[in-house]
Image (cartoon, rainbow, N blue to C red; front, side):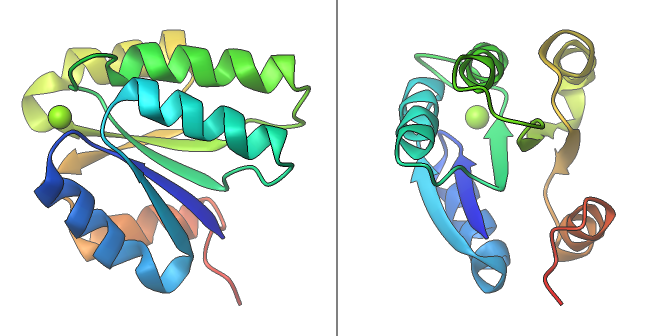
Length: 131
Ligand SMILES: [Mg+2]
């Protein structure tokens, strides 16, 4: 599957790309603006992402704003069904997660530090594991 990993911290991008490498091709973005650009490009190319892991706290454009724009692009491109988006968040940003759920329509969230177990559980839950 096609995966977009969005995080302003290199360590987090590296961890997620290592954990997800066996599940698909991972593209990386360092802020919300880059994420929205990558997402729009994928729609224009007719090769949308199956999964987006989206950090909430980022400079330039944060995860909340990016989530909103991504959902708007889905409507603009008339994509059937929402792209699966996991917000990734530190435990102390619960309020942001709630906002993402109810206002931005993210699919789910992953609390940092992200473990292989918690990630695999979510992949399973949303039928993202092939075979
Ligand atoms: Mg961050």
